Image 1: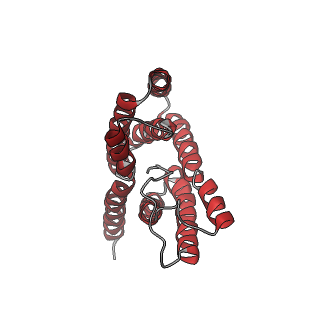
Image 2: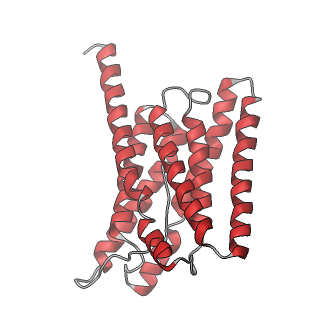
Image 3: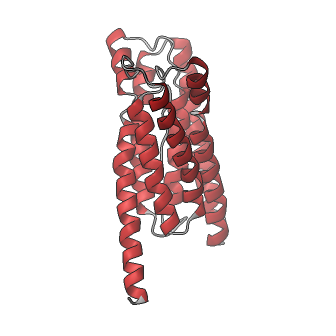
Length: 235
C-alpha cells in the first residue's frame, strides 16, 4: 500500500468521524426543546436559567472560529457543527428573552451583548497575529479550554446520581448523544493529529461513558427519562 493510499484512507476516516459527530451533535442541539415547549406553553421562563445557552453560544462561536481556514486548515466539519450549534443557541436565547420577566430580560440582553463582545475581541485580536501557527495555537487553547470546562459541567449531575442513586435528572439520550459525539470528534482529532480537538473530546468521551455506566447501574425498571434536560453542551 502506497503512502497516497494510506493518506486517502486517513482522510476518509477523518471525514466519516466528522460527519458522524455532526449527526450525533443534533441530539444535543434539540435536547432543550422539551424545556422550551413548557416555557412557551406557560408563557414564562419560571425558574429555568438561561445561562447554559449563553455559555454554549460562546463555546460554539470560539470552536467555529477555530475550525475556519483563517485559523486551522481542513477543519470544515468543526465549523459546520458549531455553526449549527450557535444557530440553535441563538434561537433558544431569543425564545428565552421573549418569555422572561423584565428584570431577567434586561440581564439576559446584557449577557448576550457580553458574549458577542467577547467573541468579537477574540476574532479581531487573533487576526492581529501575523504568525499563522501562533494564531492557531492561541485560538486552539481557548477552544480547548472552553470545551474542557463544558464537558466538565456534567460532573455535578454525576455526583447527584451517585448521592441519590437515581438517574431521574440524567436523561439517557442526552448522555448517549454526548458520548457518541465526543467519541466521533475524538477520532476526528486523533486522525488529523489535532490535540486541540482530540484532548477535550477524549475527556468528553470518558465522562460520557461514566454517565452511561451510572445510568445502567442505577436505572430501575420504573425509571423514566427526565423531560427537562439540565445540561446542554456541544462539539
